[in-house]
Image (cartoon, rainbow, N blue to C red; front, top):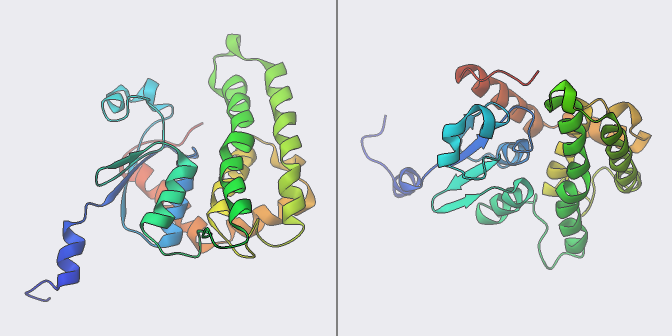
Length: 232
């Protein structure tokens, strides 16, 4: 063991660790996956879902009661895809981010926003009115309609995944992380059976990544250590 810290070690110890608040299988998985792909140090704090109901003390930390919630020094963020972009630019450089001078920059940004605004939004209604609400408040027609909405919008991914292994820039990027989570959510909701062949193959590729597997392991390990059960 060294008796003295190097200058790099000293700076590292003075830098606050990134803290990510996360629920099993929730969209906070996006930044968790991004952290693992980048090999960054972080602290993972698990919460029961939804935390605004089952962990009311969390409202003192994040008044919205939503997850993710990321703290990086003085920076606090709640938007999962935005956090991924932040991590890639603030803690880069990394090939996971497409730069402004890259011809694929526009496509990259479009996929980053598409992931939540277009793909995740309809699934939140499927989740809420098909699973989370008590039986008397469930809405089968809402579930059916918004599942169809999601699958219709997924055609864009079907086309892109038929043109290459990843969505843009000819390589794996944060755009694949954030849209990959939408496919994980769809799988959890039983919608994967309706994926097209290109999306099915694309989703299988994403799941084989070491970063994805490490994120799953981190989620499970932290949940067990902090005694936060997985969602039923």
